[in-house]
Length: 262
Length: 272
Ligand SMILES: [Zn+2]
Ligand SMILES: [Zn+2]
Image (cartoon, rainbow over all chains, first blue to last red; front, top):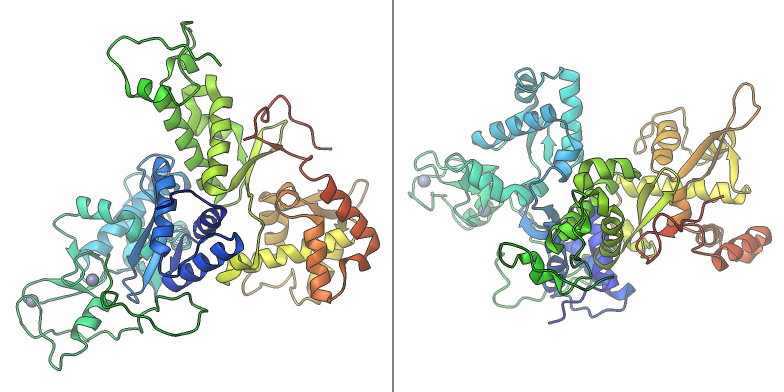
């Protein structure tokens, strides 16, 4: 297989770099357009191969394009992540020491909570207890805004959770630093920040995974201990098509493409 | 460059294995400099190049020009002796992998920006986010400046924007503080220059194209943009067309591309 970078790959990388993260169908459209513009080989189902070529060349810089699922809508996303833990990485160079401490403490609250959210009140209280340097409420609010803008956190109705891009980048870090606290989804087995948790046995599921799993069941039961599932069953979004977003909506399914693998 | 290699003390290093493919092999002269090229293994140099590439990419995210002093302080540190080699190789890598050009926009103070080698196209407006909207506003301003003879008074720019229902005095839904965006953010990012007109009291200001705009777009591109919007032939503006064509013919003369051999410092032509 060809491993040569073309201008098509470079353009794809540039656009992804400027967005940080991209929904699957948008990435597929971009893939098609980049190949067309630069007249390089294109096959609509070869996006992951195309990305692999880019990844080979990104290795020396500890960067990688990763594919992952959003905990909010269950859709596939592609993100450019940084794997280096040096002082040069984006986070370390954009934030001061006490801002980083606030982020880490926020992450603690989010991960320890069952729902995967921290309220802004909780976070603003943390700002007052920072060891490095205390932060005023106004400052902390600004930091939160920056963290949302830089896609470390995402906000919904005054509650904060980890951004999909952040989870994709920090999955390994979170799994090894929060070993006993963190949950893996019982369905897809990847890290679960926002989840529904069984009140009896304590297993957790991503909301989209729970939605899919319980879709066909009249009376939802825990897949692990078989107790009644006490949570509201999340609605699932239509799965994203495997074709570029503006392509005609004919669906092609190979027998194995029904489930998502991560 | 010398291809001689000297076997170093304790066993073959990873660096020596890699040395064959690079023209960075240690020479026999034992240098006293703490971190001169001779004392560093190619692997160490590669590592620095990779760090510099990461640093430049991170800094470029916000489109803020990068000062050499900051590069030295944050990345190069005690590798100063081989700074020009590291930056040359970082520039080459940025081109090969990312399609980006490392450009020294201010050879006197050594300030760099990254610009794309790939022509900007509609495809990048896939996601209509705030960022692309801002670029739209910028394009309008650059077009206006070009049509007005490459510079325009601040008041004229605001007047033009008001006609497009973007009032610099009113908070805009997408742009926020329009005046701040245009006079501060675009200026900091080197898309625009914002200068006081000499001998004006009260002071008046004017806008010009900034170095990044000059590098990332061209007069011809802007003229085509205007022509397309107005559904005319670019030649309909004969003065501007002549100017744009002349620029196109002379393209590449304004900046030094750091990654090309013999580029970088000494040979830098000064921008006038
Ligand atoms: Zn799951
Ligand atoms: Zn259970």
